[in-house]
Image (tube, rainbow, N blue to C red; front, side):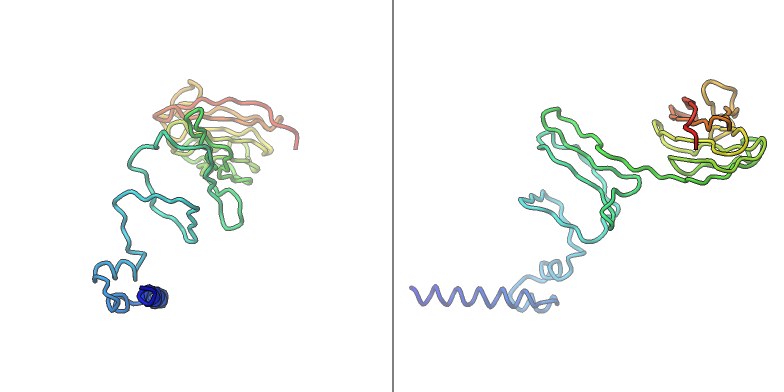
Length: 221
């Protein structure tokens, strides 16, 4: 009985060693593994999981995760914890956030967020058609000629866009399109951010290019 156990242990070790060094489907099939399974094991990038996966420890991903989406709903029985999205420098990645799970309140919320920004926007034009299109969430407009302006980007409902005028002249701020409305003004019309006080506009999109913008004087620079 003892000899049998020893032989079984030795056989197991040999199989483990062989599998550890195997990098070809033929190696795995030579150990008696079915062809389809050998292909999946030898080519993990082709591994598709259609059933549930339970991870008892820490899941580490060394490469990029792209095209990820959730087709279902969040299990309401989650426990307290967090999911940070970081880049290779350990910083919160642009346009992402660290999410906190609070089981007692049964919610998920963002602890930190890092928005895209442009600290040196140049205004242009004299109307909505030739104004500079903003492409970031945070915008410092540093070069403004007389009568020049910028226009808000085409974004999803609820998006916040911040614009500050640090130029030498008043800045005209337009909606994204000719039918857009800022603070109930006429379609395609602008609101003015004064240069003398470095005005800052906090604009939130409602729907169909209808915006509400709060404007306040910025700090001296």
